Image 1 (cartoon, rainbow, N blue to C red):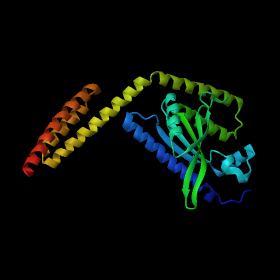
Image 2: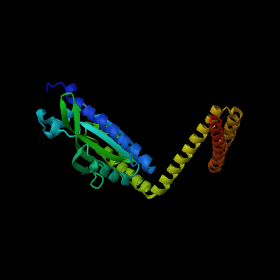
Image 3: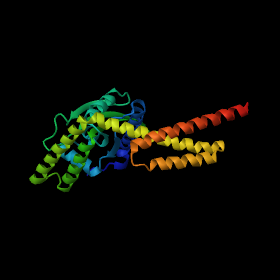
Image 4: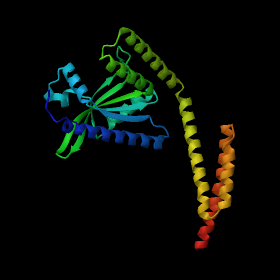
Length: 274
């Protein structure tokens, strides 16, 4: 049994995972602000368990003194996307980054595994600044759709239960489920524009509603308590309507009234200051 201090050994990998998660989440937020749509749905990360590292080293015949180069996924990042097309786009963003280096890629989407597993893997070198100086660690970035991730998570759980010796019946059913997940991804891609349009409309409506409620609240700062109460009551009445499209039109009209009232109040306050 290896006698190393595993806590110390894994520290740089833990740091790499935390930093990469933050960077990809920041990328998502920036793309969403720039383009109103981000190809990244969400990001997760993990450090491989010690028992899993040892099992993989044994399976691949990796000497214990070569774990840092022989086991490439001790640090793991998963990036989830809504659509298959987004995976290629995210991979290109990663290739263009200057804070990491792509070592090689494994395309299990075009060349999916016999089991049905689909995902896009990128092995990267990432520099971590430790107390003893810079250390380059390997990390695996997996980019998947939500459907791919759901299948892979279930398959991993079953493989763990059966110690990677899945019964033939389970294998066949999993493969069939993988084909169903792929069909779902293809169907979602075919109606992508409608989905994105609906998501944008929801986002826009949500922002308008938040802005209106904030503007109604601002009326209190100009001592227009009765007006604020009245506008809030009108908003509550509008929001109870069953036809959402009609409700949003009424909300926009109400927002214009509130904006006009606020603009007049601000102008009057400015004149009083003069």
